[in-house]
Length: 255
Ligand code: APR
Image 1 (tube, rainbow, N blue to C red):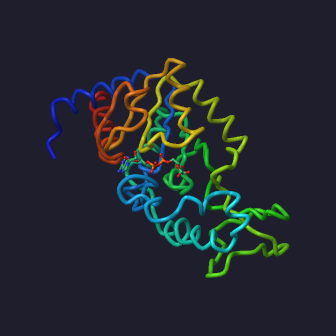
Image 2: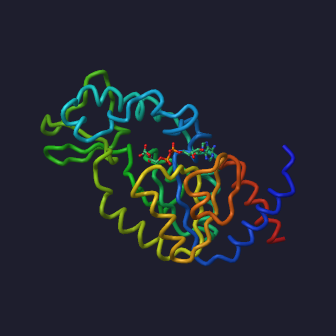
């Protein structure tokens, strides 16, 4: 598809900003995994159009353990198990190697940044690849787990198991919270990729970066709550396509 003159200028402006930045941080949401076949939570084809978000409410989980697990299993385990990183995840991993990018703060629990080879990944909402026992606090890797129709119980103590990601009404993991704030204060450029800005406290991260003087580049097929509030350069399009175009522009600058 032919890129418009406007978009070409925006891409070049973004590539110049990335080239001269000293400390870049990417802030990613569900949109970056859409091209891996994982639906977003909101908007067209969003998970919350099919499932009631209540299934991920902590109090509901404790009072409706089996029902909650039934939904969790189908949303996050049956669905996620064969999904692979896409071009967007791979480009961010390459940029980390080339030291353009220092770290990724992700709201995603799908582990795809790490599977793409990214090292400094701050999992602000946790990770679905681990289960934790609410009674003996034992941690299990999901890859060694076989789910069936029954809600899982701890092989260690028979206790209840919870995915190691945060539910609505649950605090952000302390270590991730501090690491995300530190990365945000250090960055002079933040890339927002595929995030709607609908959920707090995650949605405060780009605002903090902005108030600290960072340049904000946003990649999303549609405008979001960030676009009119913090974004300096808005690049309309899918994560894979736009990141590939920026990567191309950066390579041309190097030649
Ligand atoms: N490339 C880039 N962005 C895309 C793409 C794509 N291919 N497809 C969709 N998007 C955008 C949508 O336009 C939307 O703005 O991704 C965004 C996804 O928004 P949400 O579904 O709200 O996801 P996110 O912002 O990550 O949600 C935050 O909400 O439900 C909770 O804990 C969950 O971490 C999640 C949090």
